[in-house]
Picture (tube, helix red, strand yellow):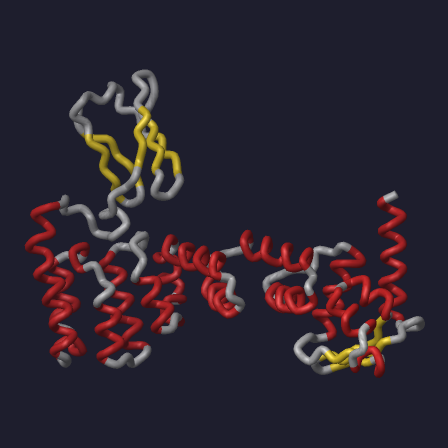
Length: 316
């Protein structure tokens, strides 16, 4: 029975494209075509209101869609009549926009599912911008988290250099940024020079740096005496404040903490088994970690270190 339905819908689609029995003119962005009133009203209440109520479209038989291309509308028809998987990185937001306008809930849901599952390092930044533009805040937050988690890759590819000031500040403000703080600072300096940033922008950027995770040697050799820091008193004050933070910070924590993520309090549950390697349930990032077997059961004095995104059991 399903095959019969598919064949029938395919024949309807083919006749729509041929246009022999169409009774509505469709004017698109940069082109025009024809359509069937019965098919369009069945497709969406958007067309039903236009073509069956006392509106201009009913009287003229012309439906104008100035923000929709003919190709995008053809993809809409292929999705609904042929059941084709037509969504990709190029047309996804175009289809989502049309789905919202025409109240096509099924298409909108598939677009959202695609956006949720297809985030990559290559498309993440542009995707983040589009998600914000369309008001998809949950997915935009997921894109930010992806950037934060893979900051090293974005930096190496040079993608960080293309971020706007506001975008970069949002990324720099994240506690989960796992890149070494010295590298964070280095790329902030590079971004500032590439964008010929104002002193106000540089101050905003430097205030996001967690200087307590940057070595004193790096700060003195690569930051404190650089020309653009020496040039502005207000920027020197930010750096000097960072230098002073070491005096207090290194009395309280281990010296190996060189990034803000490893310096966080990690919310974890430990499962100790005498015959197997201990297992850690890390609630911070919803992950499970199985530690390497040490050859003996840990005693009451063991400690768990979190270093470079890995747990290590030390002590007896």
